[in-house]
Image (cartoon, rainbow, N blue to C red; front, side):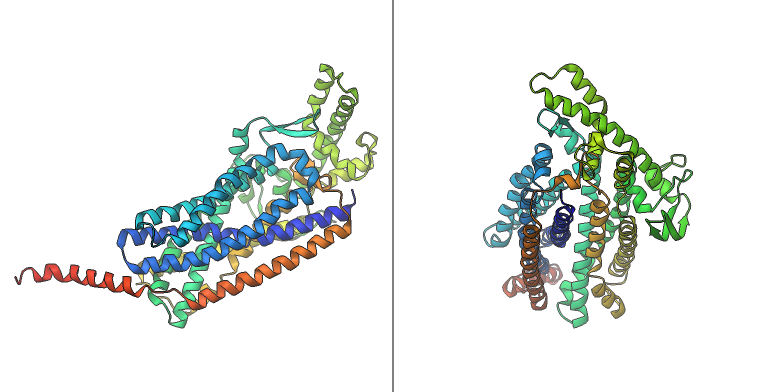
Length: 531
């Protein structure tokens, strides 16, 4: 396969995925925040909370529509640019995607309509239930997508069938409860909650700086700071779980995150700062924090984390085993209907390393004819580009702790300082609005770029997954996506800024009615003694 096609196909999918992920975190978080605000409205009956629900709900709606539009195109890419991947693992990967479309997407689509058009047709309680169903549907959608992605990171519950040349599902329960998928889900949705909280915080701070909608802004800051602080703290805990899972299932990714070239004595230190050099296989100007990486990666003080060099040496052994599996596979394929149990047994002994033999197809048409030099080259290919992964992880972590500080500060001011905020803090809240998206994109780079050279870890190399297309065809679709997505981005920003500048619309009649009832409740007991 022409490597230009591989790299261009990767570039296209990366561009569309990174762009789509601009909308996902805000959708996940705003759906929950809006449901919380409407719940307070139902409990208190105060019109300000209905006003808040409608305003933030309108911003959620804009983001939701753009997210759906960009997400649909991603699924079509599996058939367009990654057809062999779809053929090879479609029996497994397609199941959670189908469930996501049938259950989560239809759940969202149905109740989003009721949320926006049912204010005057549903009771308060019924509309609040709809708001929560929209939030649940949004999060269910993320669940099934991340189950599919988690299987690519840790392919459990499936096995290779040499007769069909495809991966086939053995246990849906194992796919569903894949620990990597579950850790990715809770970590991703918590990051989405932080993103929405920082967004609400920043927009509300802008209103206070402009002297507009102060009542709504202060209450929104209180909700965002409280919910966001809890979410930011959970992101740290859940991120630790993801690190532990990587230590169990994706040792090369963990070594690349740490730029750990050689295996260190347990417990390994954490590299706080450094400049990884892949050519020299060392990290310059490294600043280490003792024990931390060992605790994150193994949760122990006596378990080693293998370094990149050791993992490359292990890959060489697995490639050699994979060649034996490939040889047995070719014998099975050549036997037609005369496959014997002995053939199957020989294949099963080394079938777990078949994917490593496929790495050789970059250098030779038949892995059985690979030279020692080609085996060494294929083993070296199992090392992802360390520099971007190393720094993407550190930027993500640094921003995560910064969010705890920002949200914690506003939580204290909201809870104990009468919802008063210095102007410098409000300016800071506005300035930090883009930061959660930067952190989210860095996390995506760590998760996906760190998995290379695999589409499905240890099973299917990326270079084998692409469709047989010409360079011109892929470049044409990339140009089309750039134009289409750029247009959508302009529309998104224009609509969001328009509605933020416009601000919430106050229901004067409902507010006046509530005020009369509130005053009647206050004056009633006071008038009783006089009578």
